[in-house]
Length: 101
Image (tube, rainbow, N blue to C red; front, side):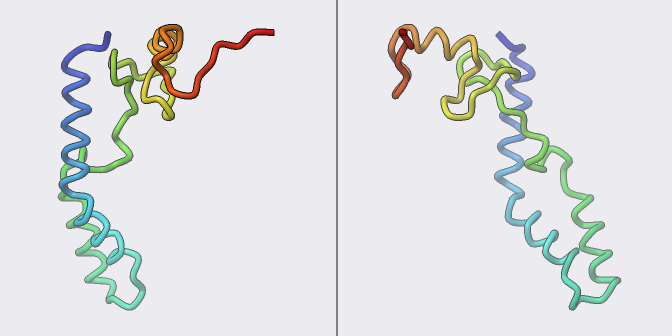
């Protein structure tokens, strides 16, 4: 089980990312827009840097929905490898069957 503070930090990052997504996209478009003057593009870059650091989607870490574990994460299920194994053995994961040969 991950520390509660780490899970809370990730939730905060997801919230900030959702909150500033539209503004970040607009500023990034202005930074690369060749039709604007260099001063306007520079100002857009400065405005982008003034946004909270955690509002960037690149800072979000995938974590297991049950345990909060950051490593061994399977996107398809939203679980870490340990919890995925437990869920599969109970038969609760959709589309997963135990192999037998």
